[in-house]
View 1 (cartoon, rainbow, N blue to C red):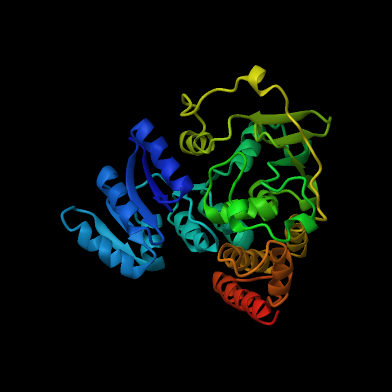
View 2 (tube, helix red, strand yellow):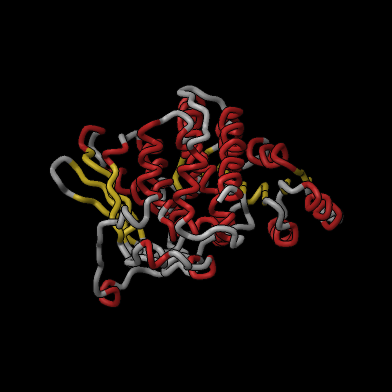
Length: 383
């Protein structure tokens, strides 16, 4: 029986990972969440893992009390999350933690030499060199769970050699504000931004999709996952979200991966790789789809894509800085404290406070995170 651990089990990817685990009869050995103790308790009673952990220590105390009738170890804080990531009996660990908080658990999985199914793109954005070096040294495969990177990974299975790849083409839905110009976005609310046309995702990533910062994160992630230069990555808006991404060879042949917009497909592939099992979702009906459309991104309105491209080109702590600045600006927007168009401006302002280091440690990333977030909040206060 395959054994898995799920980090971030109460979020969108986490709950869908549980669906896949139940479908295939996998044993879930560990579950973690940030603070949703009630849902984690229900999941623990259903799956009976060996360990659970909550980052929020007060909620962990509540969970420990509510699960005292069960033989489940309840842990807390980042140390507890990392223990679930590394000391569990799992063969594969799914990291679906939201944001940069997923970096240390990612490294814990790799250092424990577990197979990593990665849905936490910020791990590679903030610490790409650290993560890929650790994976290489430990001989640990990183299997992408993001639909776009899973698509690229699948397309590359038939690649004859590294020299044959000409470019990677990331597809983007365009989010809820596709076609609007900057002036039309001045007063859009978080409620409007959270209405994604195709995907059911958590709040943070849905706002990132609306600003298209998420596509910038995916560009940086692709650089590290597939060992390519940023200039080898193109982005195209594909409103239907049927083609999840493509690769182009030197002979200009293009290979695409298609499927319904449901995250259980890439989750399952990461867990069953290299095998393919019957799908947990329906099959494509091309006649009913009727058409597939493609557009060039509006880089003037959605500036976040090129903010990320510039950051990975600069290297060092710059990707970590823009990621932290975005996390803070994204939260402030959801809280109604800033406008939609303030987000890219605050990312640039906050990231400019980052220290300059070519070589860095996880502690350096954490220090940068604190500095940049404070810079974003200070910029808002000074407006």
